[in-house]
Figure 1: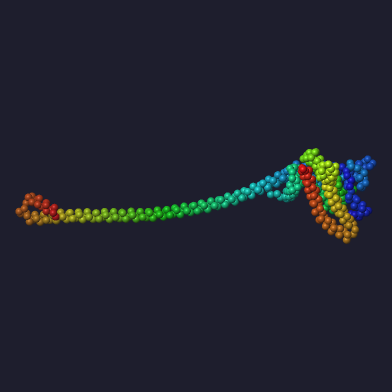
Figure 2: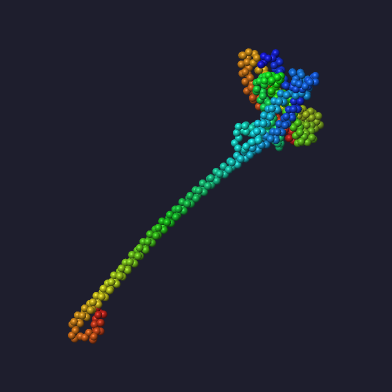
Length: 156
Length: 280
């Protein structure tokens, strides 16, 4: 065990190595480690946030679905009601039309009957006048008895 | 290979001799042959093998980590980046656990200490004769491949740490604060010479224990590997037994080299933490 200048050489070498390590080795690796640590933390946080958002979205989707279903049911009920109403209206309209046509036909029939009765009356009057004429030809003048004949015609 | 040596003692001595370059007694410069010559060179000599291996291992560490740092991505890490990040996080946790102040130097310092000491210790797992044998073939007479079995290396590290401790003690507490910490506790102020002696010894003991612990563990481990390697020259029964022993010791040593690197790093952090802490 004898000491010599190796001692000094070692110290200098050591100091140089430490300096190099401090300048060029430690900081970049430490940096990379820190950055990666941060990235991982960020990633985990983002995953958490994503999961939370997924939950919210699922909840929202469920809500929407329920709303849509309720709305659809409402629309269907409304449509059914409307259909029933339309049918009812149609029934009423058809009935009214039928009644109207029935009334018109009855009026028509009445008119026809009246007209037939009128012509029948005229014909009977004419016949009666003709008969009376034949009877009275000789003594009755048609002119002098015209008002009598007219009265008779009106009574028939 | 032990058979190439005249005695077991010579084999061991040879394996524990650094490749020292310095000025010989006769004034010429060259490589020391033997411990006495290395000693005679005095302070201004250098252990070429320790320097080469420690710098080489340090460069491997810096190269690998720099490679990852240059293209560090925040995506999914793979291969080398995974390993490097694992080491960095381990060091970062250790520093956060034992260092409670703000200092950008401490974590990279801890990383360098841990990886460098670990790699230097790791050389201990290479069979003791491989690289020295290759070196001998290449004409290099001595080759000690585990830098942390050289006290110069461990003391070089701990001295740098010690100076950092002194620097931050002065910076954080001021000269007066640092002195009062050394002189006015644990006993009352009028006993300050005793305090100074106690705290001074405690202060000096930090770098001394730091480096001696690492050196002692690695030196002893290396010694045991060398002793086991001696058995390979003693007939095939001993050689097989030695092989089994070497394997077992190497497995156990994996724990020791990691543990020693970890202890060196943790104590470095703790000493620096103490240097930052204010005593009241």
